[in-house]
Structure formats: structure tokens, C-alpha cells
Image (cartoon, rainbow, N blue to C red; front, top):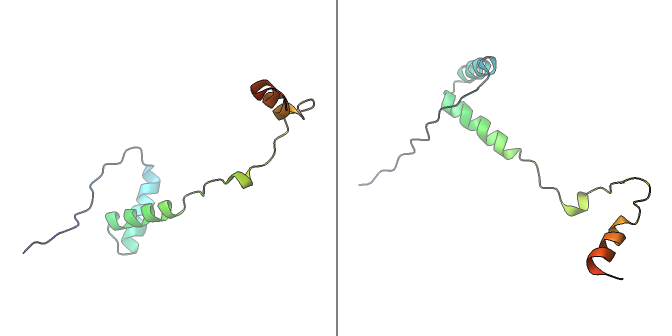
Length: 83
């Protein structure tokens, strides 16, 4: 018989704010969770809150100042010559 166990991933984390970690650990204990289980929940929550990709239709026009109103047309003229 073959059994497969998920033993998880062991990690070492540096530069964690000590006060934030103490609060995190205390909250995990209050909830009856191991640090690993609490960290997994935190990672899953963090991953689910990914910032959506900006669509082209979401871009806003930018003003480059007076005298630049036809800049894109001037660039097209230089790059592609004539209209």
C-alpha cells in the first residue's frame, strides 16, 4: 500500500516586525491554530487580494502641457512619414 502525506513546506523568514509577529502568534493561539495553519490562511488571503490588471480602457488621458496637443500626430509623421 502507498500512502501520500502532505508534510507542507518549511520556511525561514527574516526581517519580520517583532511586535506584529507577537500579535499574529497570540491571535493564532486564541483561534486554536498552529502558526503554520494561521500563516497559510494569511498567505491565501493575501493571494486572493491580488490587484487586478489594468485594462487599456481604464487608462486616463494625460496632459503634457500647452503646445503638445498634436504630439502623437507629430510622432507619427516622424516615424511613418505623411498621413
